[in-house]
Every structure is written in C-alpha cells, then in structure tokens.
Length: 239
Image 1 (cartoon, rainbow, N blue to C red):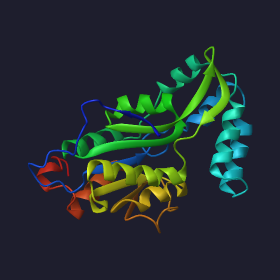
Image 2: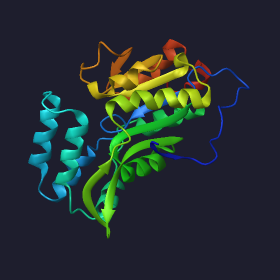
Image 3: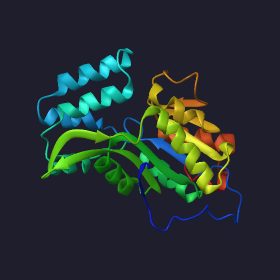
C-alpha cells in the first residue's frame, strides 16, 4: 500500500452542485511546488553532497535505474537522526505563487494531491504547507531515532502514474478532469494519466509531453483560465 496521508474529512468526490472541470490536480513536489531538493539537502548535513550528486547524475545518464539510485542515495544518508530530517522537512521553501495557485484550485473545488520521491517527513510537511488532500511518499526506516539507510519505496516514476489511476478510480474522476503538474522526465508517467498536463520549471525538457510550460504560477493560472478549466468569475481579480 502507498504511504498516503489524507485529510480525514475528505471521503468522497467533491460537491456536484455546480460544474467543475478540474476535479483532481496532482503535483510533483520537489522543484515544482518547492525549491527544495530534499535528499541533496540532507546529504549536505553530513558532507555527502558530491556522492549523492554523482549517483543522481548516473541515473540521469541512464547508468542506473531510479529505484537503485534512490536506495544508493538513501544509504549515503545513514546515520542522520530523525530529528535532523524532521528539522529539514520543516524548512520547505515554496516556489513564488505556488501556495496561491494551489489555494485557487481548491477554491474551484479541485482535490489536490502531492507525490514525492522523498520521505514521509517531507510529504507531511508539504501536506500541511499546501493544505492538500493527500500526499504520497517513500519511507525511511529508523532504529533508536537514527536513519538506518533502509527505505521502503512507495513512489517511483512508474508508481506516480499508477497513483493517479488509483485515485481517479477511488473518487470517480475521469481522465479529462485531471490536471497533472511536473518538472522533469521522471514525471512523464504522472503526466500521461491526466487530460491536462502542465510543466513548471522544466526548461523545455517536457515540451513533447505537456500542454503548457512555464516557470510562473501566475502565468499557469492565466493559461488555465483561457482553456476554460476555471470560469472567469473564479479566476480572481488579477487575471
């Protein structure tokens, strides 16, 4: 079962007392909604930045798959205390306009879900920061309050797409009613499951996989309004 934290009052599809086009919005977290790249930041606490960066680059170059790379990077963080990881998780830095963008979508009755390859601690912090409906993450394992280097993987690039399908089935939401937002090629499985696909901070990497690319959440909001996803009355005074 995926590691999911949900707001307890969310139990069914949003109210149908008016038409809602985007009923589910699924965000990648790191470098999309927040500046933080969590594992590199943890590595910096113990002087392992170079080792973790080299493993990340090996994955980008296709020499190792994502899951193997994640386990290798996590192993380099062995010895960090859970208190250190919790402190880092509480220092999330949202992208400019990200919180307002999420709140605007929620005002339009969209469910908001976050997915991250990071650990539960960062997911729970982001869940509170963005007041999201659910967050999916991976799990670090601890002994006596110290990270062992072992992980349970609930979220991988492939699993991101599966998570969207499972949520759509659970909540009775059609593909065309889903917006997915990501920043890199690891988010392609996530984007594929959505009727509307948005790239944030992708620097052109996702142009073949999305409907719109930008680094500005205000521009993303204006684009969605132009598509008819949110009515002009709901778009806000500044749009």
